[in-house]
Amino acid sequence: MKKLAILVGGGPAPGINAVIAAATIEARNRGLQVLGCYNGFRWLVQGDTQHVVELDIGDVSRIHFEGGSILLTSRTNPTRSPDGVRRVAETLQRLGVQFLLTLGGDDTAFTAAQIAKALPGITVAHVPKTIDNDLPLPADIVTFGFTTACNLGKDLVRNLMQDAVTTERWFFVTVMGRHAGHLALGIGGAAGATLTLIAEEFPPGNISLDRIRDVIEGAIIKRRAQGREHGVFLLSEGLTARLDPETLKGIEQDAFGNVRLSELDLSRLLKDRVSASLEARDLPVTIVAKHLGYELRCAPPGAHDIQYCRSLGYWATRFLIEGGSNAMVTIQAGRLVPIPFDEMIDPQTGKIRVRLVDVSSQMYEALFEYMIRLKPEDFKDKERIKRLAKAGKMSESEFVNRFSSVVGT
Image 1 (cartoon, rainbow, N blue to C red):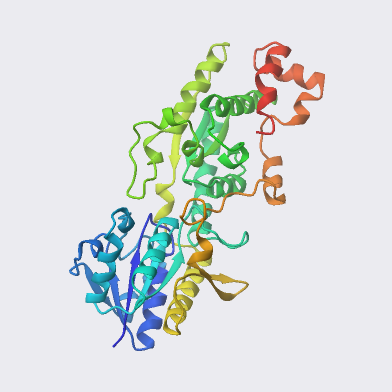
Image 2: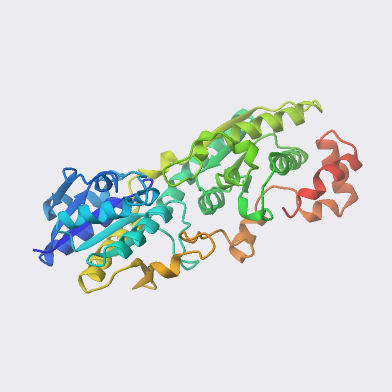
């Protein structure tokens, strides 16, 4: 009996169990034995076969409703050591595995691609999983888990917006998204947040905390000029990754060499800087710093993600059984479209390409226009400049000199 092994790498995302269930059911119906590997690559890279369990239809038939992962997950990186990938391949060989199905983001996809090269006897397929929505897919194709995360995040931000109105305070909320601002923008757009700030709208290179502070402070002043002393600002975690190296110095890294962005509290850093700047001009404010992300990752998947993930699991298994390999499995226009691993690699970095937010798109333009923030038209009308400067307790020249440079950031 041929064997299909399934494992999950990286952070959790709604829909993981739906993929596992669909893949298991299809494989068992085709006469395959299914092995679930706990904790991603953690045990395989150690040559440990004790943390592998056989899966049958009865074990998975109703898990598609559940959040989390029945196989758990980890960020263990076999590519970190010269022989890590080889050890994983050897362990899979000892288990008698012919087919490997990995679920994960860019790091897991990269490892899957390396295993496919190291062990030609095993066919490998990867299912794109991340609430960050940053894998190299066509612009209109989301990664699974993203839709559910946006929907739940929208509800949480709505509650914060009501609290902000009721208590007349400001919330600075950092939203997960290591490289890309898709999640922050999706939640902010759906909730109608006051402002959503993402790294992609800044020029290439490092971003200073002072520049981010000025964008936010300018938005607060504009809200005050409108007679409102409250708001909710969403900040993409990707902003943290773009801060200058000195600010990031000493921050812990994960197994793939990524800075653990949650260790650097961006919202709190900006809260302190914005508060100090405003209070220096006798504009006291109440700001609450929060981080949003972990609340979203293990949520029960919504209807879209359940159906989407069941399709991905089914077609990924069919793809492997029918001779496919070395590709990320996607569903586009209702059809299976495998994307070869080689096409996903960035030639400059040697890693999986990251899909960033296209800030030139009309979708982004519409979301931008609904944000409350300083815009070019605010500096073209003398009366408007006068009102804004008054709201910020500044002279008109001080206001223009301080904030005109952040327009079009």
